[in-house]
Image (cartoon, rainbow, N blue to C red; front, side):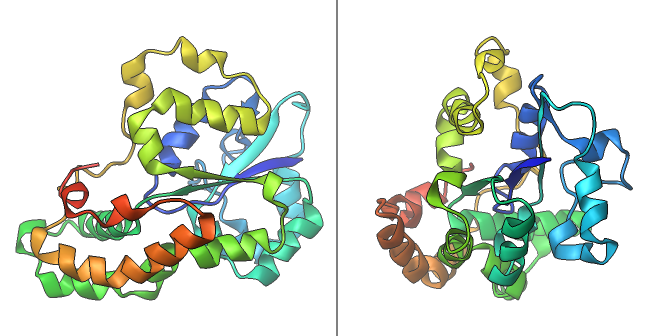
Length: 252
C-alpha cells in the first residue's frame, strides 16, 4: 500500500529527504528493491508512466513488509493537474503528502544551474538572457507557482493529509525538520537524534551552484514578487524574507 508521496518542490531538498528517510527502519521505498529501471526515489508514474496501468503502480507497493510504511518522492507531482490528483485520491484516499517550499527565486536559479551542469556548460560564460529565458520556461514557472499547486492538492486531499514544509527550516535545523516529517508520518524520530550531525546536514545533489548572479536579482524579484505576496496571504505566513536582497545573495 502506498502510504506517502513526496511531491516536491523541485530543487527543494527532495533528494536529501529521500536519503535520510531511507535510513529509517520503518520506511521502505519499494522501487529501489524492485530495481525499476534507473529510478531511485522517483517512480514518475503519475506524470510520465500512466500508460503502464494502475495495477502496475500498485504492485510496486505490494509485499510482505506490512509493518513498514511505503512511499515515493517525485518532485514533478506538485504540478499535476487536479484531474490526476483526483485519480490518486480515488486509488489511495489515505495517502499522506509531503511538499517542501523553497524561496521560488532561489529555486528558479538552482534549477537553471542544474540544467547548465547537465549540459556541461560554462556558467561564467552563460549570458543573463539565457537565464531569463530559462526562468520563463513553463516548467520553471509552474514549479515555482506554489499557490496553484497547493490549491490543486488541497482541493482534493484534506489538510491533515498534506504537510507543507519549508526549505529554510531545513537549512536552519535539520533535526527539527526531519522530526516534523516523522511526526506527520507517525513514526519515531529517535534514529535521527543519534545520527552524526555532519551526516544529517550533508547536502545531496547540490550541484555546487554559486549564489544568484547579482544582475539577475531584480529580474527574478519582479518575476516572483506578486506570487510570493499572494502565497503569503494564502498561507497566512510572513514570506517577506524571500524578497530580501541580502538573503538572495546568500548561498543556501
